Length: 265
Length: 265
DNA sequence: CAGTGGTCTAGACCACTGG
DNA sequence: CAGTGGTCTAGACCACTGC
Image (tube, rainbow over all chains, first blue to last red; front, side, top):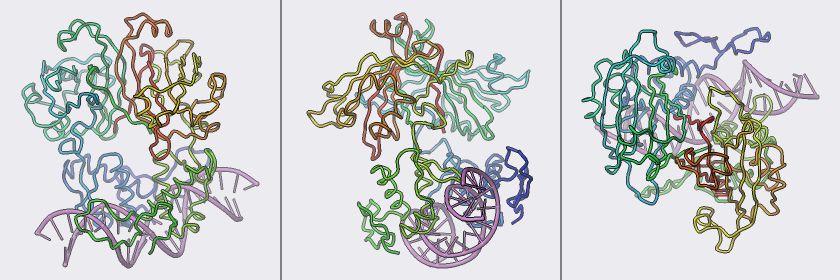
């Protein structure tokens, strides 16, 4: 079998006879990986929008001239990475931050079992939303060009009318042209869903660094807490396709009525 | 195809003609799921010990009278759940907490980037290790019989000679007969590896609840910190096979030189 | 009913490991 | 070299969805 796939960044075809002389990097990639990156490219280009159905396995198999099983394996991996969602009998759909089973996919804060106050209907309060010059740390974390600007957004999330999260977002201005406090305040659903629909930015994965801190006087006032209430500091970097960082989010969580829940495997 | 698998808890065979009258529970399970639970049973019974190689896919296929692909899919899931580890050209092995790529599979605390002090060689100090009566909370979390006892263990972990973690373990005494502070102090490798080799208890997954707290006077002394140093409170429940809880671990982490690192997908 | 994803098979060949 | 897991195929049939 040849390289049946007209890949834009063509990996070595399946039947590579690449010399194996101490080269550590594999000179070939399996067919299903090639299919996977074609699908990824399509997702990135927006061939199929979040929530839409992608072509059936059979059709993709014909289009790429491979067997259904090979397409299947590619889709398997993509759906395991939460980029696609399979629905038996219906089709395979582009994952989205809206209308997804969990309301907030990246928010691991849940109410303590004692008081089962549902975390769902969070109240948002946008404190500011302004264009500014990134700090050097922000600039490097977001891999910005020297003169690029960023949005700085501060907001408070309240659960059961209790101010619980103070969040500072930092977004590359180039990708979020025309953002406003209005929009951030009044849009429906998760903020990541707004990013998808309005700005075409889909956050695919994220990583968080968690520490314990005490609030500054300013934070005390904003969250209506005493200065001796310890808070969870959660610094998140979110990534789009190709592992491009597109958001920094520094948050402080109250953990007297909630906790950060994590599953380990 | 019939139920080819002499399953101990036999699910409906593949070609179930079960009436589909509003029953929500699926009356059949795929063949590969049956294979998977057979393998799980074998792992639980100790047919293959941690680190050992299980039979090859071909042999299992013959043994269970299914195709290699079906065995493969079962093994795929088990290795994705970190119960098995595939090694191309060598075989498939029972996962273990020793000699696994990561030294501490469940410990998400890593050194801050500023000071790249490697977290590897942790010093352990066992403060106590005693048999006692569980609290009602512990008893219910570990699903203990009314009169069952537990081990209570307290220890301090130091990284780069800095006391960083104060940990209280709670283990069901029945499963860890003959445990001692000596053993906990002087064994090689992760404590979870000791549990595997000496007591045949393999922790398969865990969940953690994380909060921010301030140290009690006692904790201040134990960790040599001031009372205004906020700590991460990490409450972990670890599970063996069949989702049986086998450990409660309440820990306090210093987060001035380290942080809890989490990946979100 | 047609169309989708989900399971299963049998067989071929490839890549990696170790003796 | 033989033995292992990894990839790929072509075809069959099943289960679920919605018209």
